[in-house]
Length: 305
Image (cartoon, rainbow, N blue to C red):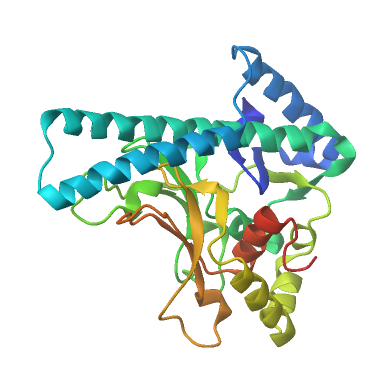
């Protein structure tokens, strides 16, 4: 399905489509997405469970996993029955994480498709490159790692190859990269990001996606804006980002504040982390666009609202 290459819950849908389709207008994009979505869901039996219900199951299973892991740390080993139970619970958690990603994709896509006037499109170009930073973080269910098949997320080099970031500095990274070194399942799989024929379909009224990168960078680099960002992010510490789940435990990642962040550098304060004890799954939040995306998913309003 050409319009369903990757659905990014909470942020909109990156849609692989010809530039001429974007030029035909939002209505054409929405109708194409609606047609492809109908085809993709017509073969599914019944209706998917609400994501909230799935999250409840994930939390219950994680509690059982935590109890067995505590027993393992206390006793140094588990009997055969407990080992098998722990393995089964972990498999269930991974299955639920995949189900949750599917449910959130369906819920978000349905919201976009409900009314054409509520959708907006942004063409991917160098002038609007911050839309990729906006989308970095959420796992993409339909972009499996070529090495381990785990979900991948959009990432970017720490430093640009040239003086300024370009599309070539972005790539897909395996979500299992953050598993601690030496732990089974750790993966460093990557895929290049293609700039060919991509556009962004999202909910209308998101100002961060309707202005170009230079204007967005200028606004968000001012002291008044940085103070607003710090205040709003600080208020959200401990909040669950239900659209960014740990691929191992299925739990929504939680907003944390760095203890060793550079003072005054708001873009180095925050990150998302799996709440499961000992889990190393994290997602960096180092761009104003990423912070705006997070705030929009959590509060309904970004930085420029």
